[in-house]
Image 1: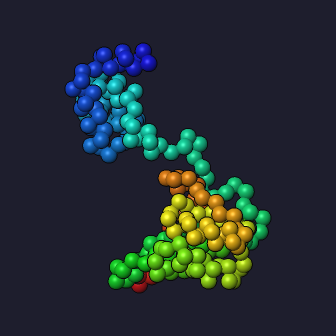
Image 2: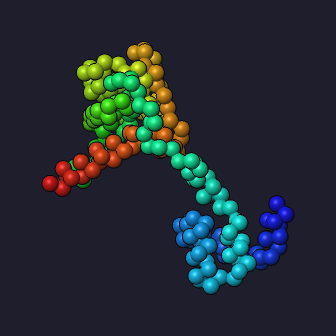
Image 3: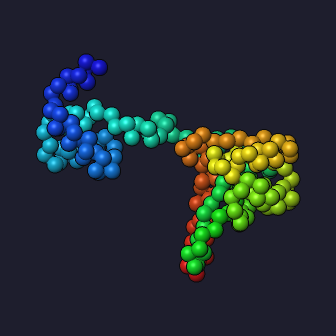
Length: 197
């Protein structure tokens, strides 16, 4: 705290304001990159020292975990249909029309099934989950979803009714839903290539 006070006392208000404005204007670069940019631009040494210590609240709020989480589970479920991860994926056809697909991946085997949705209402998502997965493979022991509204209310009620444990990932934590994100990306790539051809 004393070090911070000394740092602020060495810099003028104008310098501090200029550093913060430059950081925002450059798109919130990382601290090492930002300091290097200031040094190369010939900024005053006090401003550079301020940039080394100043904490941007926007960057702090969106900071990734110190120990990055792997995109897949370190220990996969023991068998097929133990855990199924689900997510919505937005796709475009050759006419640039947007479609929504329910992407369902078995965490143990990476078996991937996707079905197109007419809307994102929980009741419709449940119906397509039953038609696309449960009718063929039975009820999974656990379903992992994100905090999208389509996986709330009726969706949770139906999971309880079917004896499925529904687990929800944390908000703004895409790395916790890595398997769904990665397979959703592959689905998007396939869709784009199909639309081009």
